[in-house]
Amino acid sequence: LKSDYLFTTTKLHTLARFIVTRLLSIVTIVTPWGRFTAICPSVIGCWVFLLNLHSSIQHMQLPTGKKVYFASDFHLGIPDRATSIARERRLCQWLDEISTDAAILYLVGDIFDTWFEYKNVIPRGFTRFMGKLGELRDKGLQIEAFTGNHDIWMQGYFEEELNIPVHHQHIIREINGKKLFIAHGDGLGPGDAGYKFLKKVLSSKVSQWLYRRVHPDTGVGVASWLDRKSVV
Image (cartoon, rainbow, N blue to C red; front, side, top):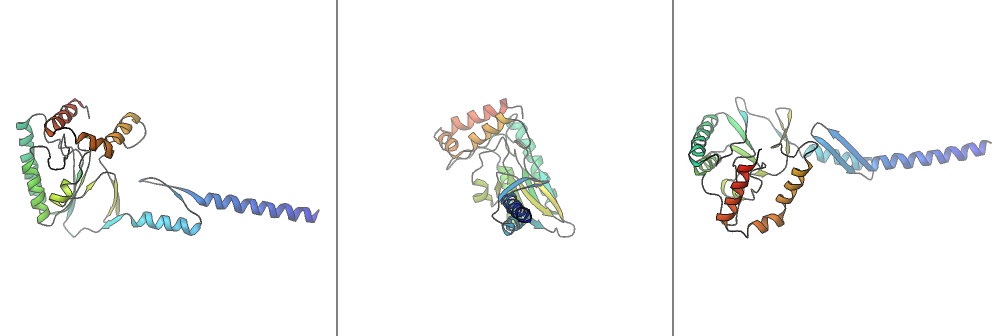
């Protein structure tokens, strides 16, 4: 009886060790910023994953008197040229006002109501606004931009001409000890499967390559017409 007990106990220990190993192999971590899943071969692997997750968060301590600004949904280009230019002038005035105490400016999507970059062509207009961004960057203001659902096809112009990085996904920043989840917001959360699928299609390299085969006069015109029909 004792021998049978020891044999059974050994088998149970082996089974428990196997289950624990498997549980550690596939780890799902739920945080305020989302759900992260990692395949870790050991406890050490899990800690490496956690350290990498932590290190991917950029940390910033603001100088005294400096601020972080967030702005989005300017939708430059609508409803008509005159109205858009008036809004653009007010926007440039606001940028001048915040430049004295801004440490960083986040432009969180839908800056333009329509935006598509060809190899050598961008949509007409917005020269005041982009000139002001270039001026502020030259003065040392940190600016980061995000794509929204109306300007999803930003592909390099801001980085190359204005030295402004463009994020196509959310980012996490820690500023003065506070963690911030920064994103335009479209397609986040449950539901809205149709839009999420459409966004993946439009974001694909194939879709962008095909659209660039269309002449800019037609391509930008069609995109502007579709954006005006959009309810968001």
